[in-house]
Length: 165
Image 1 (spheres, one colour):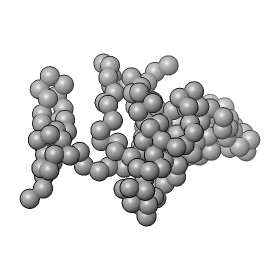
Image 2 (image 1 turned 90 degrees about the horizontal axis):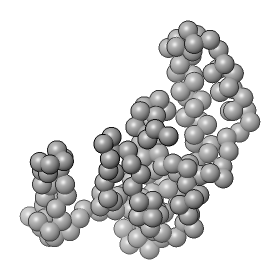
Image 3 (image 1 turned 30 degrees about the vertical axis):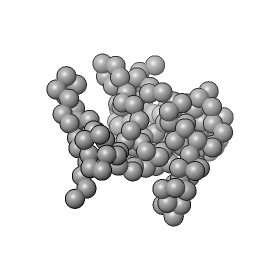
């Protein structure tokens, strides 16, 4: 019987993976599809224009549910146009963010070493992904931000989870 052990850390009020106590001793294989916003990419003029038009409406109009959803969809589209898809290998063993709001950026170098360009890469298998990991050519200065949530969280929801700058 194989199993993975999670141990409760009472100081941090969270569970932590314990590979040494798992049987066999290992961290489980994990991948996560992310979108990386690159400093070099820009949204299309059309998306930019439409978004600015909607945002320039009076506040009471922008807060109407249909208009607010339209703005959120355009902001998500804008973000996608400035981003490229990547897969992070062994993401469960990445160092956890620190700081009071858990928003401090983790070591980007650790993420870069685990990145493979593209999504839906299951056909490559574990060994194929590990062979390609870290060969993207990205530098920390190329990265504006990492969208860890993809389509699971709206643009406004992502803003709540991002560090304040």
